[in-house]
Length: 323
Image 1 (cartoon, one colour):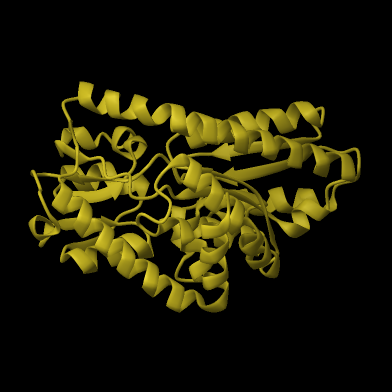
Image 2: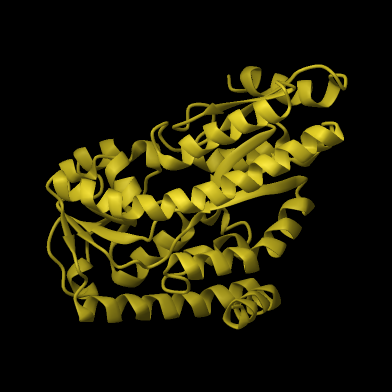
């Protein structure tokens, strides 16, 4: 039963006195060795030091406390006071969560940072309405295509068993004629090994963490988009902290954001080199494949704007105007 582990953490944050120690459990979906998880641990350590042990955060990596698609609801409902989620996973709930999952809207770190700045006010508003607060976001490295054969165009991808981990990746499967199979990060290695999936789009980080190179030998470096992980906190849990502790938490979050983006960019080349050393072929996408995927991106952008309504139009205009 997850509740017996998670509920006391929030209860402590709501009821303990100003000088008592508060302990928070932080569920996360990715392996302990992943750079996002390592950044969470550094963030928790910073909070511990800045508050002199007043607020202690325990990171639970690799979906060990809640599955990836359960974390947002756990924080929203108070089962966990704080958590990390992949924003695009919540796109079905509200399209604004999925702005950074639109292929080729923002396909570099500079563009992704710009999109993150533009997206933040919309996220703040959405989360506040659900009793939560955004602490920080960090992007994954650019997304490419893992596939079990050489491909030159989208036509070569029809019929592939395609890992879908978000509404956007499921939509891509539909548009390219692949068969979507819902697989979260913690289940990916086994799904590849057993042939449940033989293709997917993700970063070099996921390919390395999941040992994709043991099952798939091609990675097409399309650099299609940079989805973000977000660390969110239950507003009541945050409000229960005294002012100095709140300020220390926010300061540590700002440092974690800067550090996380820097590490993500540094690790991008590292992951591709590591995959090559494991026998994977890092492929430059052929022009036809790039053109086809950009067409997929254009369709998805139009669909997303239609679903997102005025807020979506405002976000895209702000992104295009931002420097």
